[in-house]
Image (cartoon, rainbow, N blue to C red; front, side, top):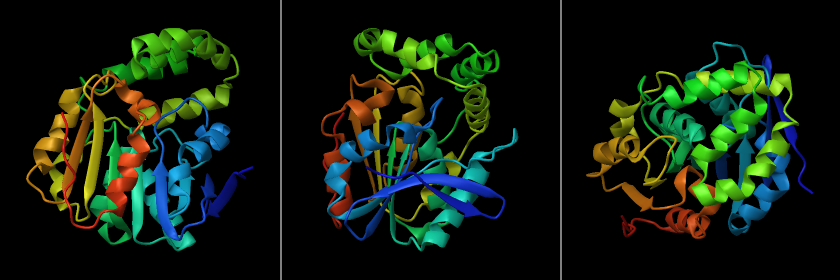
Length: 275
């Protein structure tokens, strides 16, 4: 059984898990969720089992003590403090969705810490129009409409057939959500507003592997193409486009973890691209 650990830094604390017998640090920054992803820690360990031989795997959540004005920039600074306190360097950093936003920000501002960067289902910019989907999530959270929030998110994150098969599970799960969890969810969702690092992408010094799905209903393919257009001429950049798994490709694509592991292990060889 994996234990959830708490790291106390200054006036805040961060929960995380750590597993694997390797020595290289592989850090996962997860995406937005209504409840802690660490509630599913055993499933996470099982899902990332292929990394445990070569890596010491860490998964960090955002700080426990949130204020309404919390931002991606603050999340970035928190994570850097965590890395430094734990002595993590030459990090292989993997960011999913909102976690990818934080990961890009870290790679841009603290290049000395990151050896390789993997991004999945994440944009480099959220315009007012692109943020509209999150406006609805924020509204549902503020109104404490738990079931509608879970169903709305589930329908937009997962492919239609899978969502329908899981609908009752979403309804049951929504009944366990506390008011404190809803408040936290709203703050973290709001923290993505006006995010934009598009014009700073070229300053990332490490190799980057970007995975996305053409059918993503949360961010849309056009959001991902901004990253591709900015970095397509860089020898350090690789991308892979899935088609049919939606936003949750990181959970659903059967070859997802193996693709990441292959990228992390390669030296200076370019991966084949797929569209």
